[in-house]
Image 1 (cartoon, one colour):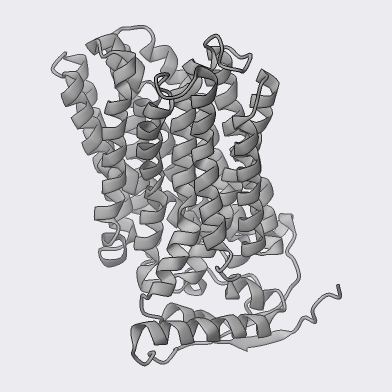
Image 2 (cartoon, helix red, strand yellow):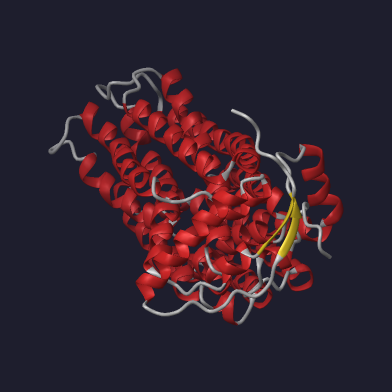
Length: 482
């Protein structure tokens, strides 16, 4: 296939996309692309619930509890990190649509194979590949969403989409209960059905996603401006028909020098030499939220069982309550990221959630909490923390140039995932398992202080990106006009 001819062009495509009113077309984009976080939440929760079942006699797979919950979880995290970086780089080079279809296909195949695994090594390989598909999805989807959603809605939609992880967590925790009920399904069947839940949901998403177009922003930079124009014209006609009104005139043009690809060195140099403060901001936000979440969620079942005598079979209900609080936070607070602004909302959610967890640590160490009141404290802290964590993805997606967007998301996601999935659990597991309230309170305190430190960084380094075009927040590397 011959390469497209490259030239310098002037286009108003970004302005035309940004001035569109909200419509059913945008809702379809939201459903087609945003539901990946539900898959991730479902995956993490399902595996957490079935690990003990895998090790039981007659489960149909030769694996121990430690292998399933330890090695399997670590390989899923490693796969997510590797997949994010590998597929994120390809997303910037080959296009958003091609990669968000490929990464979903990787997830579907790996999930199906996990449910059919009969040996530990098979389980490990397919957990790694499942993580790689999910990690790649984060980079491809966040970049596509931000480039298709109008400016005035970008913050709200991005925050809500990232918060749906916890909707998947609620579904995973509740749906796994009947699937693991031996009165309904045999020991070697029920746990396999839980992986089938992710497969079915993924297939539905795949069908919806087929109608999502390539990002016109990516197309015109890579020499395919005629295709970009055709897509945008079709979007405008659809939105105008669905809203029943005339579209406002687009204001603003951009001149860019088209390029087939941009080298990794130039991408890295742009992120860290041209935007060092934004890189520090992204690093701080992802590390802060990773440690706060692991301070709470990693050992929550052990904490409830050790200090309050909650039976292991009942901890899933507490987790469902926590997950609901996590989802409601972004749903309620998301609109303020576009109205009050990014800097006050990001710093505020980080500082407030950290302060609440700090108070929870003090009350826990003083013996003033029950299982119910501790869960209530966690819910309040995570109500704000979930919106803050979602804003970390929004931040790194919009504050770097378009040509680096997917890789920037992937890089900071990998940092946060590695810190949260490797060093965080190792640190907090040792503290929680001592059975000493002070050690567990210290784990809460570490997570709270790192979250608050990130909030302070956001006060000074936060970017006022609300209601601004992506091209105004960070000029494309290919831009030629001022």
